[in-house]
Amino acid sequence: MIDGKRRLRRISGFWVIVWSLGAIVLPVYGAGRKAPPLAQADALIADKRYDAAIQVLTGYIRQNPENFPAVQRRFQQIIRLRDRYGALANEIPDVFEADRSIARQLLQDPRNRNSTRLLELQRRIESVL
Image (cartoon, rainbow, N blue to C red):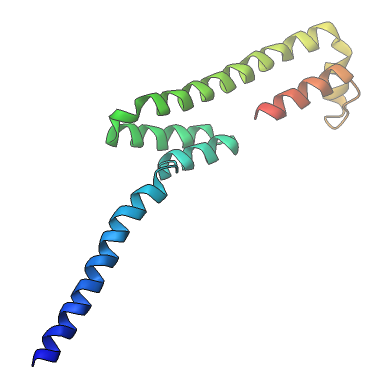
């Protein structure tokens, strides 16, 4: 019976040590990582899926109001990107006003993209989208 008690103590001691190491190592290991929702929002922003990123960030901030600065930086990034898109979209009428032949060409053949200014604007818009 004594051997059984010693064995039980050894096993119990082993698990206490393992649990203690886990309790110490895991928080230190995860300290440098982003919270999963923030990493998910970053991935969505990189994929230019801004509405989905806003939904993730909104849900995260409700659960973690203490992380407001990190969430605010991401919201500001989305706002800057959308503002850039809006500014580029506002240039479209200017391109057509400057060269009315572009509008005629596109009406005749929508695949016709001969205007370098229109192509450049399209490239800039696509880089933001």
